[in-house]
Image (cartoon, rainbow, N blue to C red; front, side, top):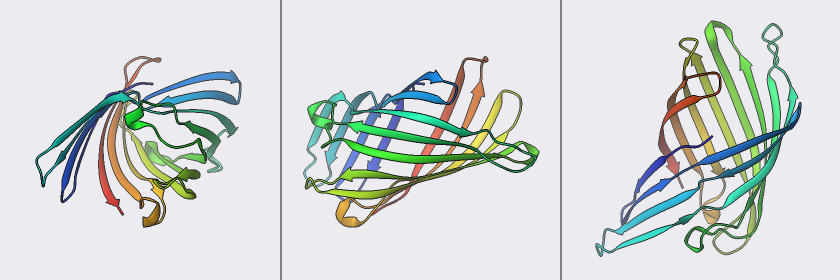
Length: 204
């Protein structure tokens, strides 16, 4: 799974723009297990200081995460039981110097999805990440995702999502909450195209 993403962020004294190529490679190794390789890929970032009008450019590659996914249960629409899985990732400090993080950052997520009536679906993803702040200190942060999907046809699906990429204190960089809306179009049984718009709700 690969894509091209554009991100724009404006604060009182700075404005940044970033292009990335998020990519996920999944390899099934058993009926209920898959290995995962995930990265934001190639990065190009431009940061403009609005007080001095100076601009900094950075190009390189993002860190990558190695992990695995265990499919715990199949869902059952009749009993309203969800399809459930566990995802364990280890974010590795392996990117270019401009985007290199500090230390290995393990994370654990639980994923549950319910098939509802009228072609709706509901998914939740709580989790934890053992992160590191700018001072090099370790801390635990929460992760959370909530997504509602709707099948519009055999090939087209819409969805809205609330995400908490990092839920932590201000001393550790603050919480990052977002709202997403998007569409997914199944071109063939093996190819799907997604379009997503992401809006930052809070970053404190």
